[in-house]
Length: 65
Ligand code: FES
Image 1 (cartoon, rainbow, N blue to C red):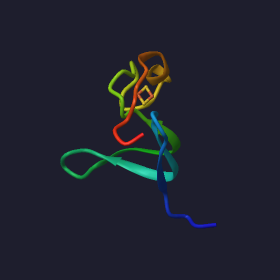
Image 2 (tube, rainbow, N blue to C red):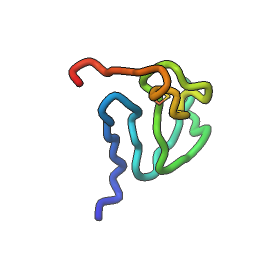
Image 3 (cartoon, rainbow, N blue to C red):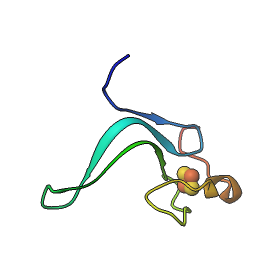
């Protein structure tokens, strides 16, 4: 199994990040290291940048799906 993180775009939903990644600020300083989480791409989450499941209630439909 690879240590390389992956991002999987879910149909009409979030972006699932698997593996460990650094969150870096504008100056390049690591502000947080996190693994295995989902990012919001619908704009409705109350916990951005993370998905909180709101895409389901919002009826989010991603382009191309
Ligand atoms: S993609 Fe899940 S709340 Fe936005």
